[in-house]
Amino acid sequence: MSSWYRLLPFQMDRMQSGHYLCSSIAGDHVILQRETLCSVIDGTLPREHQDAQDLMAGLFLSTDGGHAEVDLLATRLRTRLHERRSLASLHIVVATLRCANACGYCQVSRVHPEARGKDLSDDNADRTADLIMSCPSSRIKVEFQGGEALLNMPVVQRIVERCDAAAAFSGKLVSYVIATSLSHLTDANLDFFAARQVHISTSLDGPQWLHDRNRPSPTGSGWLTTVAGIERCRRRLGHDCVSALMTTARTSLAHADAIVDQYQELGFHSIFLRWLNPFGDAVRHRQRLSYTALEWLTFWQRALDRVLSWNDRGYPMREEFTCLLLRRMLSPHPAGFVDLDSPTGSGTSVLVYNYDGSIYVSDEGRMLAEIGDQTFRLGHVQTHTYAQIMDNPTLRNMVSATMLETTPRCDRCACLPWCGVDPVVNHATQGDIRGCRPTSDHCQRMEGAFHYVVGLLRGPHRDLLLSWAAG
Amino acid sequence: MTTHEVRLGASFYPDAVVIVVIHRLSHRAGIAPRREGDELILTIVPRTGHNDDDLVPDLLQLLSDEALRQKLDAKTTGIRALIMAQLFSDVTLTRPGLDGDPPGFSGSM
Image 1 (cartoon, one colour):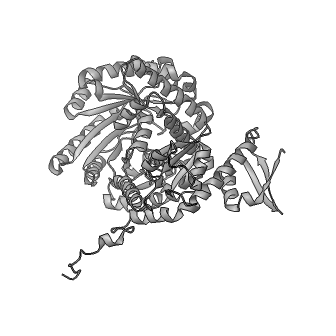
Image 2 (cartoon, chains in turn brown, blue):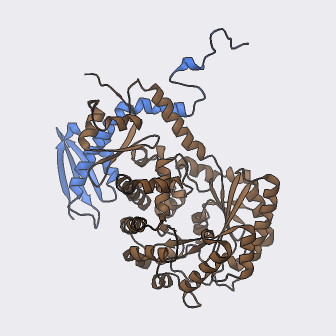
Image 3 (cartoon, each protein chain N blue to C red):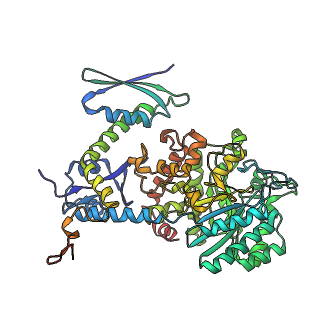
């Protein structure tokens, strides 16, 4: 018996609920019961079946021989890939490695505040600014990191002023973020940030006891300093010019609600629930700090539910990792997050300029260099042009190895259209930039997170989540 | 050392299905397949900490899912390749006539 439809290619995976998540190659998704999935594949799905309409709308089935659907799927996939052609729009500048804090999971091997030779020099700063402005992107974000970036404020100012001068000539839009613990913040710093519209990103791990345990400070409570700094920044720069990031340590896992509530209490309307990356001191202190992907997923789900409950109570709040997932699932735009880029965003959408002028594919690549692994060094600001950096054999190899469509297991995973891979993390954890999916924490974390969000999209918070995807 | 042995109908699970599932479970167990007559015999050696009650049921579920997935692939491989070719093509591959010159026009004009 001939079928009334033609099957189009899609990926499918079984969810914990026993239902099957199916995604088209353009990224639409449906959830089917097994018997429905079997009849779809067998060509016996009745035309009047309740899922038939969604399957046709989502380009899983075709009724006209498939020509129009092939064109449409190819166009949508081309749109997704076209968005990835925007090269290196995020430039991370490590102003110094010096920092007074002694965070157990520091990923950059910070050095003592009085240490010498760990600051970006004026000469390298000028070349860094010139390289940044020579990249072809029309919108550029420069993020200053450390150590504690405020400890080398003259170089931060120098780069901002040089980039702004170049932008006035080229017409490019440049925005600035400085990552800081706020412990060395001065009024002069704030005046400069206000004048140049520099956004503040600080670290806040949750309640005072938790933050101070994770991030010991020589001056007493780092939490009190940070919270006071947030208030000063808000008063001078505006409420939305300050954001905070939390890092999940093992201690944090049992306190999801308290962490979210702390952000709410401090007036934040967003929280980014980040996991610990396997770099720097996080590796040295692994026994004390680390946890499995499954433990992090449980924590994230609990915290996300808490964020949703604050929305139910009338307090608008977003979870930023969920926003990234939704943006990947529901739009053709890249998430701007290297873990969700395919091919990799390391080196292509992000470049990192270290304090010594070395250039790396990502912050993680720079972190590896701090422990002696220079695999992801692309060159030096004094000797390499932007074109030479982009033509680096390591970078080309990374890009070709991270197309998920060519990766075993990923090529038929239901999360394929949305997911990504960080070759630097693969290299650090599995000794190979391509990586092995069954033993990959990244794979377990992303698959679990996507499946959870798919479930939420079928629940009472659907409209709220759609608004998160819109940005 | 604890091992499990699972015997299945060989005709239901071609090598391509079995190999994929062995790969997917490689973080939980080493699995050695062999075929004897009409039987597919899987010898399972769980990794330390993974000798749980779910291992064999999960194996059977994955085999069933992978067989379904490969059935889907067999039916859609051609059209998947066509979509990928269309993605990188400057002309339409599905309706070639649309890219030709309209009647009355010559490519040499």
